[in-house]
Length: 81
Image (cartoon, rainbow, N blue to C red; front, side, top):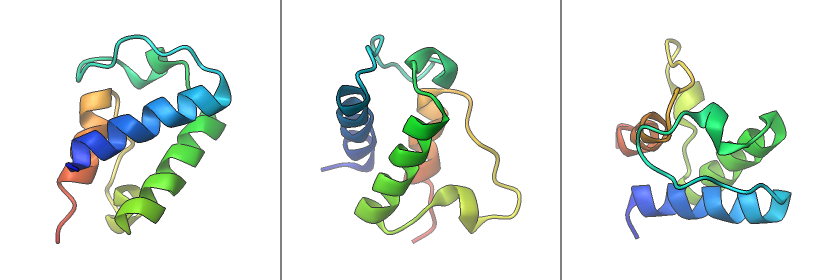
């Protein structure tokens, strides 16, 4: 399973658990428009860290939280090996 697939699947699973109705996920969809609150994003990052072994938002001192779904996916895809 690709990193992109893992991230998208985690978003969908957490939306289901948190009873969030997701709009269609696209790379240019703003994270604010996903319907996720701060708890849902915290769960997402923690779950992806468990799954991938990394948290791209704490690896780098200058890491900024992404603005779109595409930015979020790329944050995980671009983690140095």
